[in-house]
Length: 114
Image (tube, helix red, strand yellow):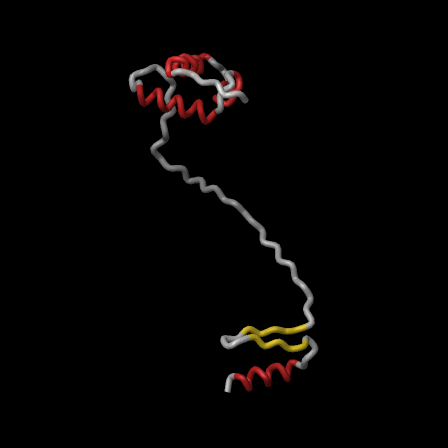
């Protein structure tokens, strides 16, 4: 889309045409080669500069919406098979072979807590 620079008077004329256009604001902007954000910005600027004008003004609803936008994400974790069993302790790491007997691992950990 090529940028078109308009004067304040040109914007006022364009915004006055909106009241006779039967489509949506987006369709109006596409028809007149105007970015929708520029349309809203210029409409707000002209409404602020000319408070008693006949330009269409969007009024905000005073009640807040009870809808909340929610974004759901899913975390995927990959598990890898390791040949060791690792314990992280306050003073370091313990690494045992995966085939070490459970009783031996328990005895080593109990020995560390004494």
